[in-house]
Structures are given as structure tokens and as C-alpha cells.
Amino acid sequence: MKRSLLPHIGIGLGLAIVYLTASYFLKENGYYHLEAYFIQYKIDQLFRFDISFYRTFYFTEPALLFLGSLLLSWIPVFQSTFMLNALVIGGLITFIYHKSKEKQSNSWWLLIYLLLSPVVWFAATSGGSFALYLTFYFFFFWLILGYIREYSVFHLASLSILLGVFLLLDRSLLKLLILLIPIFFFISFYKAKGIRGNFYSKASVIFSNDSQRRKFFTGFFSSILLVAFIPLTGFGIYHLINKVFGGGVFYYQTSLADFWNSYSGKSLLELSDSLDWTFISEGNLFFLFLTICVGTALLNLFLWKGKSTSLPILAFLALGYVISEVADNKILNLNLQLLGMLSGAGLAGLVYRPVKNLTVPRKILRTLILVLIIALELVYFHFSVFSHEARFIQTIFQTEQSSEELKSIQNVQNFFNGKHGARILADDAIFFPQLSNLPESALWVGHFSPDFQHGLQEPDLYADYLIITPENHPLHLNDIVAAALDRLAYHGITLRTKVVYSDDLTIILELLD
Image (cartoon, rainbow, N blue to C red; front, side, top):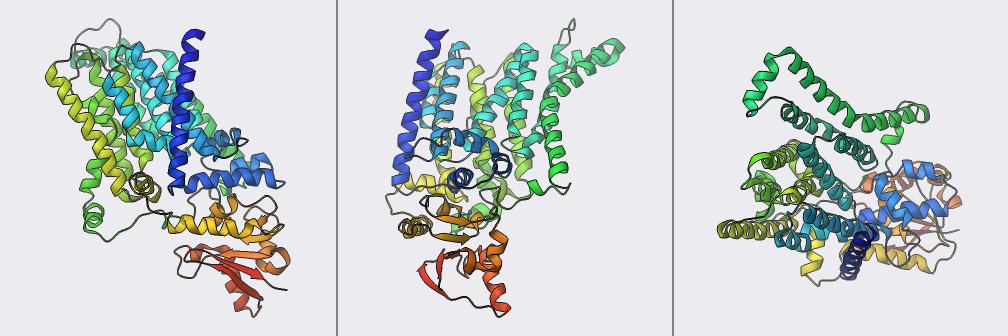
């Protein structure tokens, strides 16, 4: 076992180094991700101030990304989220390739997709939480497919643990349990012993016999309860903690500073008045078409026989889930966390897909599908409405200078580099990128500082500098510090300030004696 394990660890680490190198060059070319800045800011906050780990951890979403990044935060040079992503995707690719060899489904199509897919590269180098989502979806569908073939309690227990861990990534996606109900319902027919024939003959026998009917529903509900036990128990414990420590008002769920995009709903979207954007946003037909095609889900819709029909069924269920999620607001919800479900379902299906005795036409068809999928993924990134996704593809194919937002972040950090012991009052739900890389000698007063409310009332006593948004900034009305200055001015309280730095996104005010 050690002989087979060590080479796989070496391959995974080698891939991680490649991805980490790629993320370094992307960063040098102007790429950045606000989620990576947010996690780094939270880790800095934990070590700089006398704040309990529990409080910082509980106010950080996604908590799983925070914990993984915290373990790697001692390594200098790279932001820890980029290192975590590289390790996760390197390990995931190694695991997929190893399992495909065990299932004798390995092929050069799978390897080429894993090495060339923009979705996989984005997951490995973007510095966000998508790598964890893609990994979760792969194991989610991989365990389901394993249960379809073996009817093993091990797969059900593993699904329960996986969904329980997923609480630390996204509580709202516990509704994935609903996706399992129709899957387990149909599986229960095939688990019935002593009954032969197709689905309809089995169903007629089961529902016409009292004993078989009881066995059917007992197995069906026991499967659901076994999978739901750990995630529902964890969810109940979470609400119990909320009831005790949050006064029953779900304060911990609604804090403004626990999400990296709490205040950034407007600035995250890449809006354009071009004809392409009008066609995509108003009709959504092309964008929805990309949703259907992105990922490897298409590979599961061809040439299946016998039990393998479960793969396209799972692909269609995943697609139906994605469409239902984006039905109310296609643009805001249609991100790679949902597209990752299609990619994860497709990758899990490829592990179980046989590739023996493929005819030449089928090989040509699969090659064309592979090229089409990679091309559509590139098109998706090009037309993405999310700034970190569009920025990813732009920094690969363009050599333009850093964006205006990144320049603003860097300029603010450079300004405070020489200000030893500077006290800074800022709304850290907006300015966490600027605050995360400040020198250790600089001190800031943010949401969780005990002096934050006092600093808003009397900034001159608690700060040397104020960071605020300009009046035309889309987040200006959400800026608590800017609102506090307006309130002081309204009550006739004047502060002697001087603008020491200004751009379209940030203003630094120095408080004068």
C-alpha cells in the first residue's frame, strides 16, 4: 500500500506546485480574488487582536476555506487560500486518475480534460472557494454512483459525513438532500431481492405484495434517514448554539462581516452595454445553454447501457437542480458553484464509464465533445458576469496592467507602509483587501473591535486616518464610517481632516490635531 501511496502523493504535490506557480504568474499579471483577501484578513485579525478563535471562526463564511487556509497561513510569500486550492485540486486529479485506473475506465480523454479544462484551472488557481465546491460535488456524485452499483452502507455513511462537513462550506445547500430522495426511491426498486424483470415489472410486484411493499419503504426511508442524520444533527446543533449565544434572533447568520461579498453585490458583477451582454442578460438563452454544456456532463449523455443509464439520469438531475436554483434570478445565482455541480457529476461519471471496445466513430464523437466542452468553458469565462471569473480569463490572454481596483488596493497599502503605529478607522466589510496586507505596526478599528462604535462617534480619539468610499462609489451608502462622518456633520460636529490619498474607489483622510 505504501508503494502505491507515495507515488500518488508525489504526483499530487507536483500538480500542486504547477498550479501554485500558475497562480503566481496570474497574480503578477494583475489577477486577484476578493475572497482570498477576505480570508487573509480574517486570519490576520485572529493573530493581531485579542479575539477568540471561536468568534472569528463563527463569523467567517465559508468556514471550511478559513480553517484550511489557517493551517497554511504560516507559509510566507503566497496567500494561503491559493496554496489550499492548489493542494486540493492536485489531490483531486490524482484521486480521479487513480480511481479511473481501478475501474478500468481510464482514457486519454479524461486526462486531457483534467489538464486543459478552464474550470479545473480556475478552481486550482483562483484563490476562492470553488475548488472546495468542485471537490465536494465530485465526491457527492461519486458516492451516489458507488451506492447504485454496490448498495453499500459504507457509501450511505460516507454521504452523511460528506454532507455534514459541507455545513462548514455552505449551510443553504443542505437542500441537496432533496436531490437524493428520487435517486434513493428508484434505487430501492433495484435493491429488491427475489424479483426479476425490468423496472415496471418490479414495481408492479412490489406494490401488489404487502410484504414487498413494507420492505421497499423500510429500505427507502432508512437510506434517507442514514444519509440525513449527520447533516441534520449538525444543523440542529448550529441552531441550538444560535439560540443560546445569539438570543434566538439568528444574529450569527446575519452578520455583515462574515461573507467576503457582504457589501459587494454591485461591484462583483461585470456589467456592460454591449450587444453580447444585452443578448445574454435579457434572453438568458445563450447563458443557460452554457450552463447545460459547461463541465463534463455532456460526456455522460451518450452511449450508455445497463446500469450505466444511472449516469445520464444523475446528470439530468444535477442539471434540473441547477436550473431550479437559477430560475428566480439566473444572473446572480448562475455561478461556478452551481456549474461546478455539472463538472463534478461529469467527472464522477467518467470514473465509472467503460472505454473498452469503442468504435472509431465513437472515439471521434468523444473527441469532438471534449473539444466542444473546453471551448464552451472558455466562452463561459469570457462572458461571465462575475468579476473574478472574467478577470481570470482576461489575465491569461491579455497583458494589460493591473485593474483600477487592484491599483487602488496596492496604493493604499503602499501609503501605510511607512506609517508606523498608524491607527485606521474603516468599514472592514468593504476595505478588507486594503487592510489585509498592512504592516503589523498598523492598527485598524473594524466591525469586531470593541472601540468601533466609540470610534464612529469620536473618530479623532480613536484613529489617525479614516478610509472611506467616494460619494459616487456604488457602496458609499453602505459605508458605515462615511455615514458616521455625515452624521457628525449634520449635528454640527466638525473634524479637521486632510485628504492624503484619493482615487475613484478610495479616499484616505488624515485627522489633524
